[in-house]
Length: 263
Image: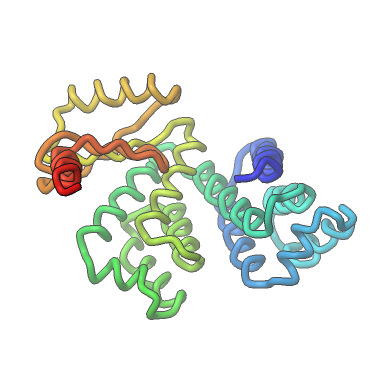
């Protein structure tokens, strides 16, 4: 992420925060806007062009997204008023803030983190489902319909909306990466980070608590643990926080040893 994009995203995030209570419609509309802008090269270029007059860019937002909520339009106007490192960064920022808005709109009784993790686990354990959602064959509409049919009544409307939007615009991202990306943004909105822990056997509650505290100190923020059990790692632990991976599994150590012996 370039410096221009970091500054622009920070300003737009502040605009979203300044809106106060965020409703579901605002988040849903921002994600819809990301799809619209990404699907129109002229619109994307016009809104991301920092050399164009601010009044002109605001007029475009009003013309295209005039039916959106006041909060959604305020965020889109803020986004289009900034300077971006690339047009792709501009679209990604709309998507990111849409996810944040949906996370902010969720009732306190809803854990989008847990719902995303449960869906990710279900997909990873079912190769046919993973192929149906992440393969190149099949329409975006069909994949979104599959998500809605699988999660309808079982997950919050926020989680369904987030997954539907990401699967409709995956880019080059694999399904597991999409879900991890969404979970990271949701966690940021909630003021914590997610550590996905892969172990050969389940951790005890005390072990998980100690690990979460140690990682919280290391990363300087509250860490929540998502645990995956995979006997094939043999022992040890694989830890992923965002894009950072610490692989201390026995299987990984054995693989390293084999490489050294073969060299």
